[in-house]
Image (cartoon, rainbow, N blue to C red; front, top):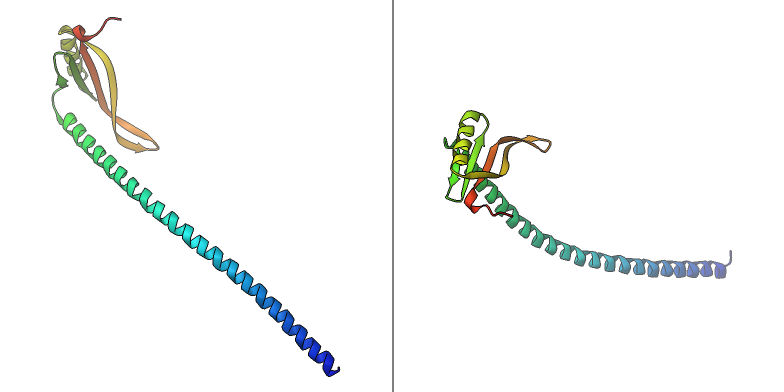
Length: 152
């Protein structure tokens, strides 16, 4: 092997190495740009997530407060010995607890004789059983006095 050929191989080797180094720099720049872009977008996503998390926390706290208040109201209502929960000249709301059928029917009879008519019933479910089922605690019966019922 002649020295010329050897020098040419070395020079060619340097050229290839320089070419690879340039390619490597290009790849490094692309990776760096992608990393910067990703980091910038990640920061935006993080900021939006914090904003949504704050809103979600506030809504959840409000809903939990409402549920707690509703639960306390229901406890108070169901501990009452009275069947009539609320009564005015226009409406009467009667609580039908499980059991005590005779007493409930007596109260309905009394209201009917006073001129009240049943207009709505709402089942109260409070004891979750899992799988989306809940145990009914009782029902509200809404009565309206006949002089306040419009004729259609």
